[in-house]
Amino acid sequence: MGNIGRVNVLMLCDTGAACSCMARAFYEHNLASVTPLRRQRKTLKLVSASGIDLTTIGNVKTNVKLGDALSQSSFVSLRASRKTSY
Image 1 (cartoon, rainbow, N blue to C red):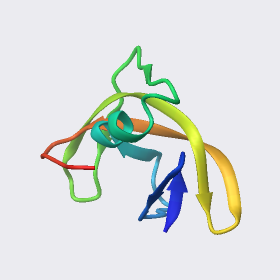
Image 2 (cartoon, helix red, strand yellow):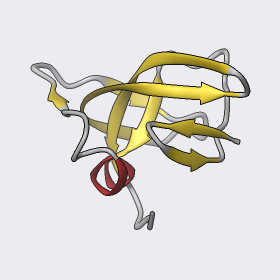
Image 3 (spheres, helix red, strand yellow):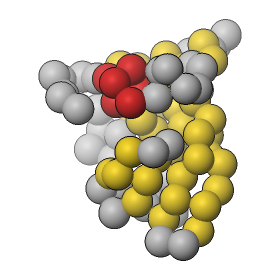
């Protein structure tokens, strides 16, 4: 359990991941009013651990708190491949 922005979330810490990702729906529901989404000039080609191609739409910088550690992190925002609710 941790916090992204001011939202309590369950998160997966994958130390082998190339980048940190966030669903566009999560961004729009929880962070859009407080932090900008920076659109990408070039499309990143990302593939999930299960082999699914991921569509990136931009980058978000926000605070992340895990335990007592607080840091600013950059996330790649993804277009969901299936319907997700937040």
